[in-house]
Length: 125
Image (cartoon, rainbow, N blue to C red; front, side):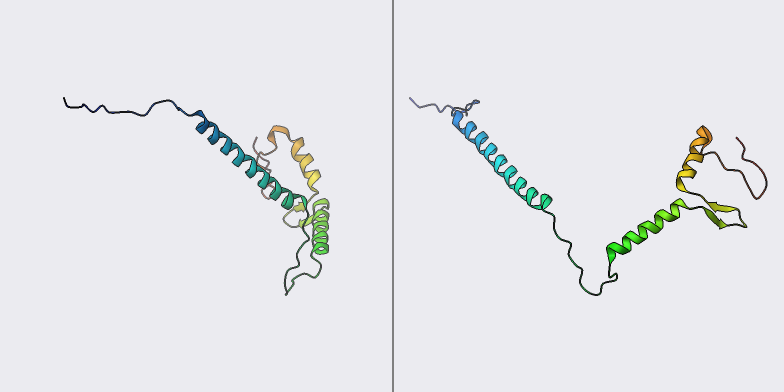
């Protein structure tokens, strides 16, 4: 009699659980090693302050920190002073804090159109 060939199939379940356990353990080991490397790099870069490097010649500023400090002080002075920008046009500068108080004092109409000074007409509510 002739032998009949039966097709065989792979089993649906894992017959050797150590394969799955090994894969999970390998992944966890990889993750722990990677986290250690990232932590070492982070601590090296983020914790240790690095000295500022001097730029090569030609230097445009001889003392950039002092220049920045003077610039910031001049800007703060401008923000806190009042005076005329264009007296003929009726444009004046006031300190920022005072301008914020004026705007806040207007309430809901704070951003309504301003009065037309040149025509002598007020803003329509």
